[in-house]
Length: 175
Length: 394
Image (cartoon, rainbow over all chains, first blue to last red; front, top):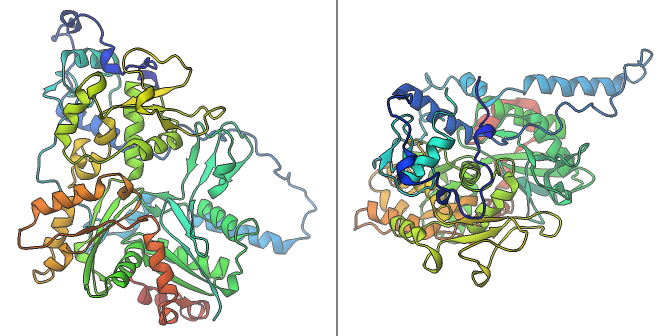
């Protein structure tokens, strides 16, 4: 259900950056009737923000280029192949490792059962909230931003950036 | 005992002793080279590293994927690289703070039973950095190590070579997050680069810096033409004529209009300093955690009051992210603002923050009581995991 982000990327812009590619004269930019646009509530906005933050933790954006390729050199099972039991033993040891040690981070964290443990641990070491409030930046050009999009809550700095935002990203994918 | 010592360090890079080489600790796959998976430093052999796919054994800083890690180690310790004679070699290996017991036990098993090293020392990276620091400054008793790496940043106070567990702080911002953020904003504003982690990582290292006055730099970046000294044009590599990206020199920049040559160019202005700013204010992108200077002060304030001035005088910056130009000065000025005037503040950035912990490991291995610190294979075979749990303080 989740649309891939690639579908909403702006086409590769020419040399000048996106904020110069404004949609048209300023009075036409906000031509969409505010009554017709959907407005996301706070929970939906929070879900979008969480999804963006989780996407920042990925190692790779693309899929494995070797996935789906046939494995070359894989030996077909030969039925009278019981001569080398020593080698086989080591192979099962390797498989045993694979099964045992293939847990992901979340599973390992839960295994530790840290919420009931005493003393400092991985969870207590996490940094607390900052003392200064969050500084808002325009989602389009990155400069400090005073205004918020009515529909989705993204920040923008000028009407030009609002136009770009509404054309490309506003409400383009929802959680 | 004339046994060799190796050391592997960190999540992103491994460093092997005697040659002190920095080698990536992961595997790579390229869409052009269909059959082969490249391991560790074989990345130099890849002819076309565009769209490079990374396979890291670590997730969020902790070792979860032993398949990949064992393949990397088999390659590094094997015939093609260092030809390690396991039975005669000691190994020093660093681990993240608060490492999970299951990972520690797996590590013991793999090092002793599969590779059969003669002796193993498992430490936190900060302990090695602290050891190195105290060697340079023997009169100091306390220091606080800021280790800003690939997955996260840790602030760890050390007093007399023992870490203060209750004051360790972890900020979940690291080099990976900065590179991914830079990829996203470039992809939205200029050119689709979401697949090009390797290339954009290079861009980040070449072009980004930490600004000393954020709002002033923002104002300069808004100016047009010649006055915008922050703006820079970066030429992307195409791997046929241009092997490695570089910044266009100021004289050659065409400030209005297009470039005539066929190179792909990124124009970066506020991204240059807005991206490293996330280390100082993670709330800029929505992560509700305090930044590095605030966390340093918070951590020190959780310690007994008599010790606090000693910690403020010995702040050490290590890890890859401290290589950003201006990092040290910015940390100093922010910590100075947050500290009472009667305390002295001193922030040290070593010449090579990435290998600083490794140098500490080298000094430890030459120490006389090194043999008391390690766990030998015979010890482990007799007593199992409990002897490692007692001896190593992770």
